Image (cartoon, rainbow over all chains, first blue to last red; front, side, top):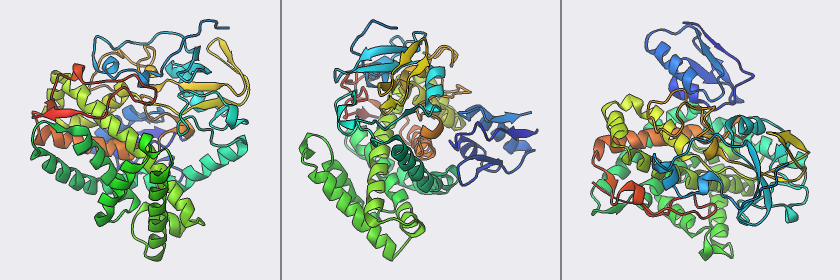
Length: 62
Length: 392
């Protein structure tokens, strides 16, 4: 699994951190950062869910 | 140019039964923008489609300031709601931007995750106390309101032995009994003094971090704390009440969530989508062409978030309450620079509470069928009256 994010779309809702806290974080402005771009196992499932719940469609999971 | 004008309410102010009952819920495929007359009798533009609202929430031609605040058009004629933040657009934007910048770290999702065990502990205690009450009991006054207040007090740093005092001060604020503003003044005084005490002896909470990390006075921190309480309490309490009724009114969906607690986060998003929320009034800073109309400079623009959550172009079968819905990019917390900063906390609070209620009080239900629970169509009333009698 490979995760990419488009910080320009991010609105800082933090849904990714709530959903997959070991994969995503936010910088001091609230914009998404990726802690683990290639997660596996439970983290991969959480990352998929995070992409689904992101309100600004910032996260792509391939 | 639209010529039809009717006096209309935002969808979030219509009786809640219209969002609660499947046969009354309506998918929205109507006009994106239309000219209306507000309950206050003024003209406004009502924006109801998802794409247009999302666009306008990211459009800096729209803001909360108005160059002539004394003569601005109003939605409800309520001084707290129909408030222009400034007469000068630059000043209004700066205030909004600075406030968000100061507060953002304290509401960041990571920080809220650390608060989660505390929210679980507070929730467990209140649910236990609620479970031994005589039946029927009032879910609103006995659980939704005190839990929300407790959690926000915890975040702000109100000492545990002052929470009752804080609750009493909150209940004195607002409403017809507080037309002189005495209750508001008393509460502000309490928060200002709390800021001074935290400055002398900081702890790990929002007020301590605000006074120690920024060049602000105790008065300013008191104002910010009051704003957070105002913004946070009413809306969260309502979302809990709405969510409870939505689940109670759909036993199959409720049973699905009870059987699989992993569904709770999605279920909460669906409760938030179908309930919707009230957005604050905005004013055009220049002419804006959108949805086939031209919104004129300084005109009132109302973003109908609850209606947009029913937009057929944004959601599959929007009138269906589906606890497994994904994706679910509802607008209940608004969007862009206006997205609710308290959203992560509200989400955690609701997830924790509904997980707890479904396991501890599986038979919890409204005393009378959910569809007959008293609702209201008063502007700013949120479509639901305050009492919510339940039994189990």
